[in-house]
Length: 542
Image: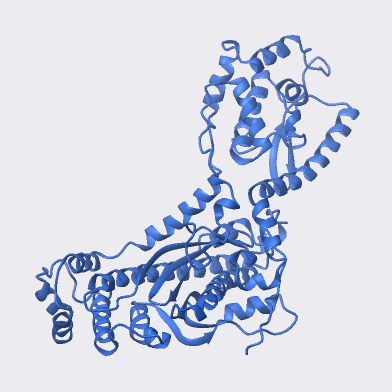
């Protein structure tokens, strides 16, 4: 029996009814050592793969049998705990040595049981695989059973199919049931859908009391602590990978952060001699900085744009378009990034709205829409100045920009469904989609906040704010401008990751769909979490 499998005994009974003597009676495997081998491995795999009562019962039975078992991977992973046959063999040898109650019960049962039934003076064994929902859950190699036992087994197998479906539902319910209940409650107020990300299945992973929506329910109120930590680790991993910049860029950024220099003189040298002039001004060795590197040149161009911003507007304006044109726009022009600026409608948002509306809808008009490989991969929005008349707009824009990011991820799923010709998608494709973050940012007044959206499970998503900072306003804010360059380079890396992974998963879906063999096999993938569709209430513009 493979370490990944679970004996059918555990799948067709409630966890409260599991015990070692009952298992030994019901299992037809021989010899006695093999029964125990399968029993222990099944409990280990249950403890590793299940949650809630089933996992607790499995851990208790393991403890009753062997105190020294150290469970690994007790988080949300699905790796093996302990699986070697040699380990299980040692465990069996220890049977008579310990004082754990289930050991004594097993030894007593083995002594008292009758010898196997014989046919013609010899034991006759057979091999049978029991398959439930496309997964082999156990193997039997034992004696012939009478008709009554066969009927009983058939009934148990039928119950197993029903319980597998119920167990799957219960596992998800235990983890996300509270979040789904809160989402449904929030949706009871239709107008709240414009002010609460939760209405759209968005779990807020941000710190508490952070604007916008400082009072919005946070993840720790909806999920278990372990699940919150797991999701935060995922987002942190995405950001860490995106923060990897090339040596030339890092060398220039390091000097700019630690040096005192005149912005005007810096820009004058940059215009005259490019990066080479900057290196000469800052006494940087050219062997550390590649003057032809595009990211390095980008930093010089951003500081040049910052100088123009200060010289022309004094770093102060209440017009969002001016901020976009002279500050956010130039800093967004990172190498190898394409975006559309100026109230362009999101195609992804249009398609997502139309899919849940009886009529054709228009996508949200966005300040910045980022593209890669013909797909929308990110979004940016400038809400405008921070005065009282714009407070509500900052919140509705925040919700809208999250909805567009969510729609962009849904568009990847839709394309995968079209290419694979499977709905729900194969588990492998769904797992790859969860690795695709959607980066986005929002500018409110003179502060910019960077976020990523991740798919948690099915229609449940999460948002994480990975950075925020004030925009540079005056000539002395050189370090602020340098940090802003670095943040936009990281944002660019996240966009590229989204573009690369989305292209790969769509290609994999096409390969899956073109494989005729896949069409012949009924896919028994666990259904993802689905939320009921809602329609955004229309607001009459005054």
